[in-house]
Length: 183
Image (cartoon, rainbow, N blue to C red):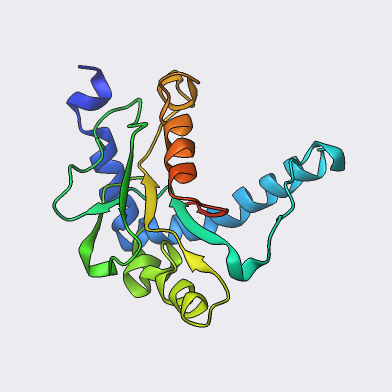
């Protein structure tokens, strides 16, 4: 067991982020992260962005949500938030789930906005409204990753990695579109 795990570093970080001061810090530094991301994106050539146009009308498409918020059903095994390397696994839950059915096992973001409106992490209300209006269809399952630490072999390995396994499950569910919701 590493030093960080022994001292529950990640749980202490989570407690700090959940405090009023931690939430203010996260809010204050969020703009800096967004500016950095904008600079990084403008340095890319326009031809570098992978794009796959839809081959059928949106009303015939099936959409799944993939979030990095560490969401899992109340009865499922939570993500390992104590590992300094992160937990590269993912969990699935029925798209009919309610926010009350879900728990968060993630220690690297403030839950202040989620507590005010869970749709910031999992936009169920808007997606169900679109599905009820036949704008699109929802896949039978949605997916969530927990904190994955660094980009690990367990995440991206083509044979055993969780990202290729998730892609296979999305394919098996007949998913045409995936809404990626970072936490």
